[in-house]
Image 1 (cartoon, rainbow, N blue to C red):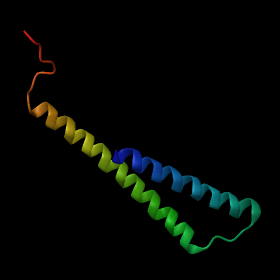
Image 2 (image 1 turned 30 degrees about the horizontal axis):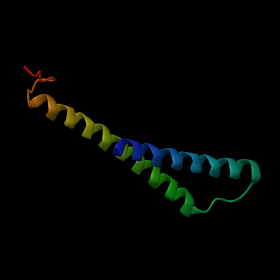
Image 3 (image 1 turned 60 degrees about the vertical axis):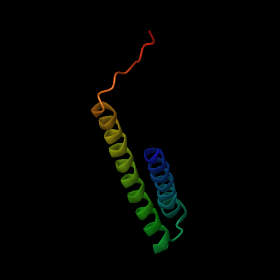
Length: 76
């Protein structure tokens, strides 16, 4: 779950950052400091959430394997 949330946050911040660059290069609009800072913080936070999600999935699979239960239980 956190992987998908982090991926969406990182994607949105990447799109907004790309828009700021395009707006500056093609239209000449000045970019204030706060939007670029916001994009940087959101992108880094999104990448961190992706990492936390991947680690959580990994630890969850290790936990399931460590219980040593059979994958299937057959009724007699």
